[in-house]
Image (cartoon, rainbow, N blue to C red; front, side, top):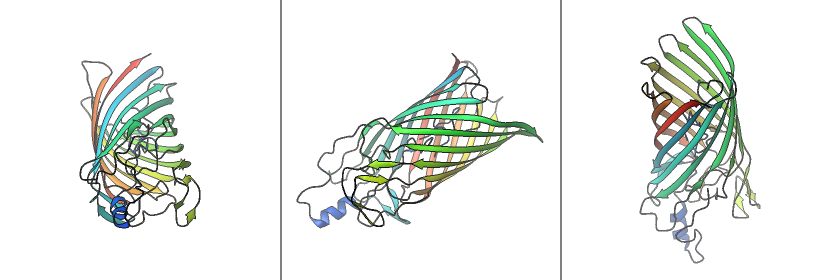
Amino acid sequence: MNKYTCGSRGLMKTPVREPKMSLGTYLKTFKLRYSVFSWLTFAFCLIGQQALFAQSPTDGLMMPKGEICVLANYEFGHFDHYWEGSFLRENQTIATVHRKTALAMAAYGISQKLNVYLGVPFVSTNSTRPNGGKFAGVSGLQDLTIALKYEALKSQVGNGELSGYASLAFSSPVSNYLSDYQPYSLGLGTQQLSWRALLKYKWNSGFYIRATSAYIWRGYTQAEREYYYNNGSYYTTWMDVPSSWNHELVVGKWFFGNSLRLEMNLSSLRSTSGDDIRAYNAPQPTNKVNMDRVGGFVQYYFSSIKGLGVLAYYNRVFQGRNAPELSTLGAGITYQFKL
């Protein structure tokens, strides 16, 4: 769900299901776990519930033909409350959940109007004490994403420039992580395909506004259990992960001869199907996840070192359904050069 989107399974300290666990202990253990999106979404398609702010499938910038931009980005996210359905709960059992993501991405200009992107994140999750000593975090590679962006429109209109873009992105897990291990799972464990349309208007003064809308299709993920409940009983290991719509509105401005870029953004994610997290039950990939998020972003290009840039951003989920009240803080470095 973030703007610029350019594991291996961990071991638990003790088993998630203890053979002689009492009903009371079981309810305490599972009642406050929820579904976290790495984000890419996506990031493109929630490639982790992550962000890509330099020449990406979700912004209004294009790489010149024959040039490449590489990005190294680190993001830290945390939450201690989540929405169980529409009810906001506190993580009384697992305390504060942390999610750290290191992302590597490259963008290349195939032509002046067509760019290609490739990225993969390394994700690490853990929970602060007390969490009953029952769950350990995991770490590993998440999903590989490849995307194309095409500049379909560019024209002078009034006191500025109107541009339009279309992008297509595909992602798939690159490690055998357990998608049903919420909220510590690295990702959703399924293939994702997104179609995105973007419209941007930039005034001659440097101010601009950008609106994007995307449909994110998701397939099935396999769980390590043969039964689950999703508004009915399912005797299978395969879970249908809901698809979703992602919308974003951005207001920004360039300063100092296009060396400094500041943005404010408002974005939303709406699942097209799915169920609610049931009370005193674990979340699962079939849950209907809705969230609204607000954030800010800054990027600076050094005039003394051609092609070098740095960026930083902060995002906060302020409303949701079956989603974490997640705050993320990230920073990265970019370098652009001709091949």
